[in-house]
Amino acid sequence: MATATQRTADTRSSGSWRDLSVRLAIALAFADASIVVLALPQVVGDLHTTVSRVTWVIMAYNLALIVGVFGFVIGGRRVSPRPAMLAGLALFGLASLGCGASDTLSMLVAFRCLQGLGGALIVCASLPLLAMTSRLGHLNTARWAAAAAIGAAAGPAAGGILTQVFDWRAIFLAQAPASALAAAAILSTRARSRNVATDESQPPRQGLEPAVANVALLLLSAALIGALFLVVLLLIDVWRLAPIAAAAVVSALPVTTTLFERVARGRSPLLLSTAGTILLAIGLVGVAVPTHRELGWVFLALTLAGAGLGMSFTALTDAALKGGGTAMARAARTVAARDAGLVLGLLILTPVFVHDLNDAPKRAFPALAVAIYGAPMSNTVKDDVANEMLKTYAHTPQARIPDFGPAFAAVRAKSHADPATARTLTRVHQRVDSAVERAATQSFHRALRYCALFAIVVLLVLGLARTPLVRRRAPDTPL
Image (cartoon, rainbow, N blue to C red):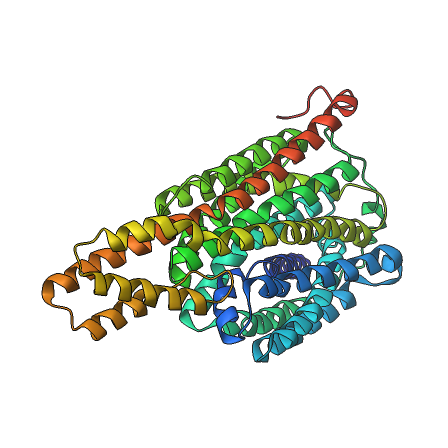
């Protein structure tokens, strides 16, 4: 009896370790789509590139992941999940080391593509592996969806902390041991021989078809570009926060996502995804309200967005995984929809905010002229300030905010400013920075509203899907 009890305990412990390691791998793969966002300004400087080009660090990963998962849609039945997961973790970890060692943008993008292929193996093999730890299919998809939502939301905050403590390369170097840890946990546990074919086809539950859920998930992911990408650039490039300070602000996203994803368990995906999308849209519009640095307001807006993400992303992902086919094929379709949305959002929104950000200094010129030529200084000092600022503007890279500090320092040194003039220059400098910050902050508003518009389209998709399907809902469906 003791021996049997011990074997049962060992089996449960083994299953728990495998379950945790698989969910860690899922979160790692989904986080990698956004974990580098807080480091992008540093990458731009170190690799001497532009914001427009550095977005390929994100898009390359997602495009490669889409290509990889489509391979699983075609040949998923011929692949065993455990070897696929181990191969994916190995490729992901090795490519992470390559990303950390990259010294050119093209090299970094190439290794990001390899990371994406490794991520495709991970996310597609993870659902059938989770099925080996539970007899209840809906628990498998719910845990998979929860790990994906939390990983996607936690990416920017985790990347910001690593960037602040070390540098951007640490983001990738840290992923290698995380991959090795997950692989070791899977290797150390015996794979159960339970046939997961019984988990291959699950009828749609509670009024949301898998195909509709995947379309909604694609559009929702496009909307998430505002919370995962644009907000981060606003905090670092415009409001000049340190990466760790920006991570503290965007931490509202993973915290509330983690709390609210529990709400999605066992409840109507249609109602939860609708309510969550509304919260996400409100949060994105809220971020587009401030005209200058308002960290508390942005934190509150991201809290709403995170709550919406926790409900809608988890509910839609869970519903999307309820379709037919193998577990690998269902995971592949859902991941492809999600990453296609991220790529779509970047392709549409990057030109918009880059254009508006480039025009920010020009829009600020009237306020700058008033700040300079309305100040109680000699005309010579005023002209020197204007000339130095024009030089700084001319040498500022595209889609970057000019730093006029050196320009004012040069004027002070050149004019040997007396104390009164020095104090005036300090006040003018503050007014100039404030005017530029306001103009640059407003440059993100249009793109953020487009993100909210993507969320509104999700609501339209869900509304169109509701009418013919609501009749098939069970009368005792929990709300």
